[in-house]
Amino acid sequence: MSLTVAYVRVSTEDQVEYSPDAQATRCRDYARQLDLGPVTVITDEAYSGKNLDRPGMARLMGLIEADEVAHVVVWRLDRLSRDTGDLGGLVKLFGRHCVTLDSVSEGRVDLTTAAGRMQVGVHGVFAQFYREHIVENVKMGMEQAARKGRWLNRAPTGYSMVDGMLVPNEDAAQVRRIFELRAAGESYTGIEAATGVNYSTVRQIIHNRVYLGEVRLRDQWFPGIHEALVTAGQFQAAHRAHVPGRRRGRDLLSGRVRCGICHRIVSVDYNERGQAIFRCWNRGRGCRQPGRSASGLHRAALQGLHLLGSDQELQEAIRAELGRHVCPPGAATQATTRQSALSSVRQRLAKLFELYYADRITSEAFAAEEARLTAQRRSLEAEEEATATETARRDELAERFEEVAALLANLDLDVVWQEGTPAERRVLVEELIDAVVIFPDCLQVRVNGAPPLLVTLAEVGLRDPGTRMCVSEGGLEPPRPCGH
Image (tube, rainbow, N blue to C red; front, side):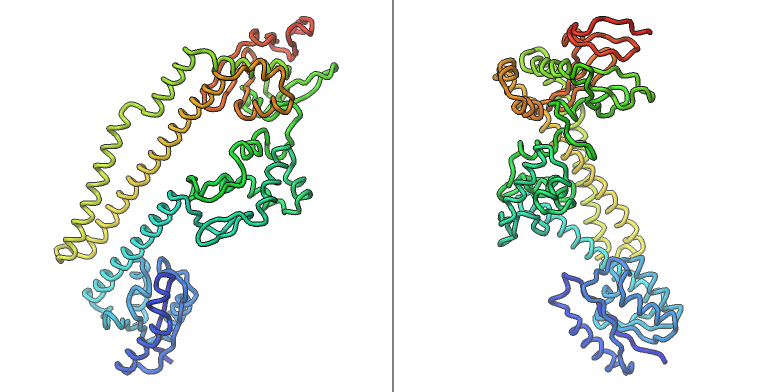
């Protein structure tokens, strides 16, 4: 038995104007006028035409391959597919099994002639262009909304969506408590036990910048217009000094000391006098890094902050270096060239469509050139977006350095350090110190927003141990030979 099948597809943008029932009714009326017999309706509701991964389409293709279909009727050819490649594949399938194709809007398509197949190709090109145009408009609308500070997804824990705005709800206090517990050194499992919020949700909350008052579009974050649940300091405190799978140590530099040889986090150990010693985990397994006393590294961190806050020549050198990165040589020329090329490609695309509308270019040539120019345009736009993102990052780095330099210039570090409690010192370290990197012959202090600063061992009372691991701090341990 050969069937007449009316294939109906609607996607979200078509749902209201071209409902499944309306399409099915028009297809039945059309089949009745041509006396095509009873009509079997196959529907794919809420499916895009970007590919053939649809249950209804799979059923239709199965019936055709089983030679059970004589006629296929659609309301419009783009109901079959909005991809030129997929549409071409369907045309070949219909031709192999002698299936006629009728469109209520475009009429009968003669798939046995080159003109008929070209007609399908032309409609396919425009259907694909329409789909890609919709996608571009949606992306543009989402980007504009994100840049205006609007949240685009489902409301996260702690917020409700009210009139398109994120508004804190009854779970907001729980979110704040989760950040407080994490900043205090609690593990995700411990937070789960304390709050009743499951492990995965706790982890998502801790890493979600929406609680800082920001909104996300793909991998970018923008300032939002909703109320933040935590401050930048609280968010950073919940992240700093935490290494996956390891609790934060008692020492204020725990999690911030790295081995300059194997580049791993250095752990805290204690000698026979109860003094904290940072030792590389890979010592004896290919790494020759000596152990270093914690108090010596504390002095190194303080020395780095002193240098950054008081050395004017160093500050000017850093500004000059950051300036070269913010505006590298030739950047303006490259940007102008790229914008000119992008404008040229867009003009050529517009001209191509004019030629096609004027019937001065074949559909095959149009499809090939349109695909080439579109790929070129997207590549230039991606490069433009990447450049803008990198420029913003560099600007932020330069701005952060000025903030840190100004803070250190107006801060009596020695008084704050000597009179501050361990908790207050930890806050100072977490806000300003990114890492202290240890090498066999020197130290490197990395202050947030500034290039690495070199500190010699002698400056902080540490000895050069040679090739043997021997920890010394300001002469507290007697010299001993390192070769025995």
